[in-house]
Image 1 (tube, rainbow, N blue to C red):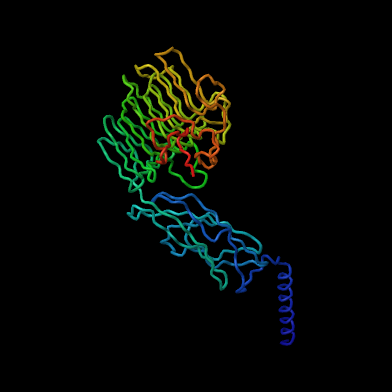
Image 2: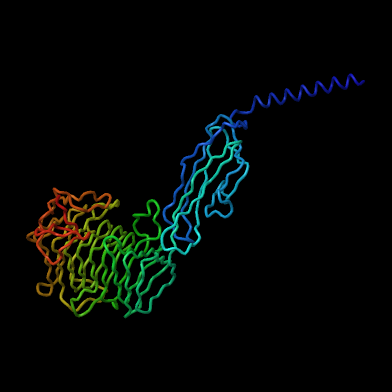
Length: 465
């Protein structure tokens, strides 16, 4: 009896072993987990780096691809951030956020996608600071890592910010405007060099008093969108822009950048004089979904200023007022968007409806400028009244225009910018704008370089070797 039972047991064991071997033989090789100490993973990058981020404001996502180049499957014992639960970095794996994941199976020749985000705590520092960590992967006896790097920046955060008394704003830390910045009537806000204002989506600046910026060549004042990563660095329409109301006066922007808004500057400041309500000195207005500058019934003095890449127009000057542009570079040839023929880059028109306008006659002037763009005609001049009610003086410029009735201008010759695709609007040595200007009181260019006895057209003076 015992002998029979032992025989049956041996048969059962051999049967189970056979079934196991058969199952093993039927299991695809890429599903068989290997415990070999020699296996390694591959990664789409050895470092994940984020642009400078404001503290308490989360980042955009970065994608990391983890690849198993081995024939067999592996079990990743642990995926975790080096600083564990105290890490500012968060990993999303299979839709679940965390700082540590265990026993992650990865088939042979297969890939795994991780999403990495970072949220940085304030450090009470004026200068940007480095935030480092690593993402480690443990497979069998091997430990591999991917470095995580971001720069953090403390900032002044404001929501519904209304400035009701004369104020000097320092450039020590950026200002993050989460919905609006208001300057109250009869209040002057002065802004120190190097100050930067970052506007969230749909945020805006409304100036009822006076805004006076004191930027320099090396430390300009900046008004721009909050996102700086990837394509958002030069994206149109990321905030509403700056609006100067009829109560505003004595605005002076010096070495100031206005970037990536819907309309960069809108001003409607009618009055009974020709004293500039807005002076633009050595400024850059760029990348607008609408207009760079819309001036309605206002007094504008712009010099050594670059306005470029605005879909609807660069500078529109309409209604009675005083509009003067000297040594400005105005280019609309670098817009990755189809422009319509009626979207002139620069317009002077003495008529406007639905807006209060100045009591003064219309005066428009362009001297020593470059106006270029992708349309056949980039200049519109509309006069409803004869002189002296309407005066438009356009002389000594390089113009893209089908109307060559204004004398002493260069028409339709490529200005030969160094590389407008990357926003380098300096002049090439062969540019027809070199030495074609007339002497004015503007003796330096936008970068503070001295203009010679025969100045060049536009904001940049070619520096002869």
